[in-house]
Length: 382
Image (cartoon, rainbow, N blue to C red):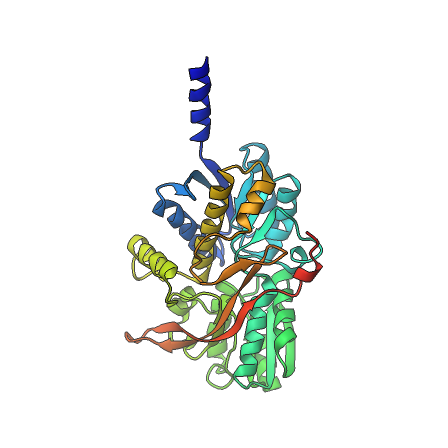
């Protein structure tokens, strides 16, 4: 009888923790979700199928860039598959439709990208963590970088959804100059000719835009075709200039000023280990975007929480105490959680230059912010 109980307990202990990874794998943002997914899986592979010493099983589904689909997948994973630990969502409108049901249902959500402002302040939740950023902060760093570059008059654009609104709010919060024009584009937009005309008429010192994934590729190509790239500089945040965009637009990206919390050239042991493993698995021709860096760090953060909680995701408070210690080495360097369970981290200026092989490469420059949190943390009552 006692032996049976021991065997049953051992068998239960060996059952992997299922992690529901809901992300965008199709459409113009498909490469974003693929990079995040592949980096997360890489962290699991590097530990032999475990995170934090705990066996895990990654269950991946494509939200199709549709909020309703993301919500349905999460509901099914919780009710049918018994999954309690989730990650993967890229876009804030999908997070807005999906995350509340997860955390209100007793599940845990750890964001590798989307960090909408409404979940960072009064609507913060003890089962909701963000490893990437709070949406505003990356754009705040772009606003500060515009100041440091000496721009006095900037035209700003972003898609009309939560992350786009957070983007322009964040940029304006720190930029000290004049806003020459402000436009919200459509989230499914492919033709930016009217916006190019308005930019040309406004004659700004620079253009700041937030267009992630395929939107950014289309915008940058058309910006060049309109003859604006050589006359009106771009100052952007990481989503508008990544490795995939460089490959897509080539020399058109040279000269773009950006900001980021991570880049492939970061000189720390954790990043060197990640870059070596990534290159070995995916090849030197596939440079990871910052979405991959965030996906990998998210896996490490979850691993640290699983290790500290003994793999228990049902006791959410035990998991939370382990998670908030942030006991892992992030590829971005210094990292800790603020009171709203969003990151406090450094931000750096970047610039696209031609590499030794003549191809565009993102080079990291000076630090823009040191250990910066977000403005909404003060409103979080946890």
